[in-house]
Image (cartoon, rainbow, N blue to C red; front, top):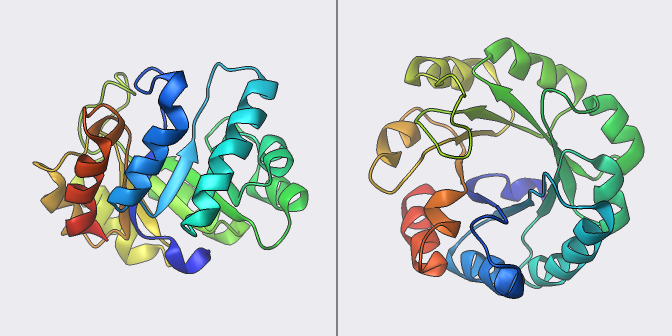
Length: 207
């Protein structure tokens, strides 16, 4: 699965995806070219996340697409997911590795701090994410990550790098020109009336 840590990375948002078509919508994004799916459920109870995660996992496995669980290595293990994505307030990479094992994918949010990315590499992370390059409704108070920071990260960090935040088909080119390995999006795909086509457009230039 690690060889696929590039291209279009889609992150779910239950405010954008209706529950009764959640799994189908995720599959549409995969058909459109998403190479990684993250289940991001900030306010849902654990049992609901586990049930939903296992159902989505049945889909991602069919397409050989990694399923990443946001924040919780314990939930990732219970679901049987391919890995976990850790934010600044979550457990350490080392602890997540102890819980999930050597074969799991561990990603780390670096916000706009290259030093955090370098520390993630030392800790054994498999990829890092920097954001946000543009304003985004998902993180309205987040300080922007400049193109210069992305350029610096690409020069110094030797594991896959994703940019996330406000990326659309209209503004993605300057991000890709930095040399990042992929782009992570939420609204651009799951806020679209046609997630498959939206994913296909982004995947066509990022995969």
